[in-house]
Amino acid sequence: MLATAPQGFMYLNAANQWPSFTMQNMAIDLTGAMVLDKAGGDYVSAGTFMGGPFEALDGVTQWYAFAVADSELPPGTHLQIFTWTASGGTPPYAPGSTAPFAGWQGAPRDALDGIIFSSPAEELWVGGLVRSDGTGTPAIRQLRIDYGHDTYLKYLPGIYRSDPASADLLNRLLSLSQTALGDLRGEITELTRRFDPKVAPDGGYPSWLQWLSGWLAWDLNQYWTGAQTREYIAGAFQLYALRGTPEGLRRYLKIYAGVNAYIWEPALEASIWSLGTSMLGFTTALAPASAAGAILDSTAVLDGSELTSPGDPFGAPLFDDLAYRFTVEIHAGELTGPGALAAVEAVIAREKPAHTVCSLCIIQPRMRVGAQCRIGIDTVVGAPREAQLGAPLNQVVLAANDRECKHEEVSNAN
Image 1 (cartoon, rainbow, N blue to C red):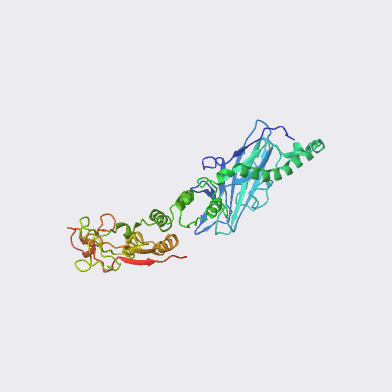
Image 2: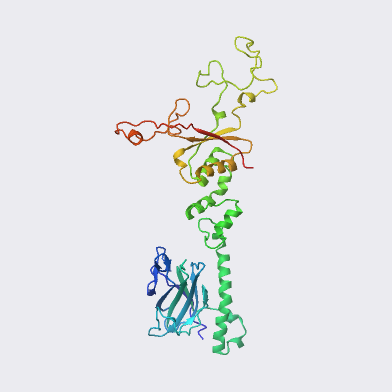
């Protein structure tokens, strides 16, 4: 028994190249994982791999455990790990046969970690048998080997260590529980990392990213990339502070619908007409409220007439048709994807304040003086004449379109 042997571990996949490994009916994919080959449209039914020899210490090494890390076993696929220890020579390996690893120590099928029961030796060889029903393939990204493991045997009474053979078996059995507890201890040590969206693990179901999004009441989108998911979860708390504002709605539309929206509130651009400060046609507008006796050149009395009643000193009725209303304008070219318009409407209905009314305007390629003429916002130059009429490319024209700018009132879903 090598109770005083140094302990450590090694990873067998270096730089995604799996050095010293030979494969049968298998290959290394772009992510550095060992996968089954394809035959036509399906994966081959079986493949094998073997790597070694691996050396850890000078002289005899107590090889303790293996772990198939960061790997996947989709439904319909299987993996079995085999080990062989020796102080020289090459183990028997017969790829393509019914028993390619005859004489090796085999772990239970589909076990992604386990104890190495091969005898202590200078060298270790690792093999694997991979099977599939043709619909998928395991993705073996990394193999970790632990050696010289310091187990819980030292905490037991000395009588359990008196017989070297029995102590060695007990040492290995204790490694099973220590491996499980070691993983738990590792998770506790790295707990702070799991609350950071930038580095939280994304494997399994539910993943830590899904937990984080759930705690923040943040809906994940199946079309987001992994980087986008982490970015949006990290910024969710700050974005919540902008809910109910034009900037907040603009960001939600970009995140969930993928569009760049221009949002404006007519009330912010309205002003009361007054002599000497208003320009006819620019800063003047008809008020929706009744004149209430203040009719120019008829019933109006200088300093004695008001458009509103004394009980409403702030002139709110003058803005009844504009108050609590806003417009969301989106270029038609950004709504080409399937379900894009429905996604925009869903975001607006969910995120707009409940007491407001939103007009959704889809900007078509045109320019209309007084209606659609803001450079860089809703003035859109159409395709060249050659593309429209087949004429020579001699000028750029504004595209003709029978559809008017689409205005829709979007109600709140709640």
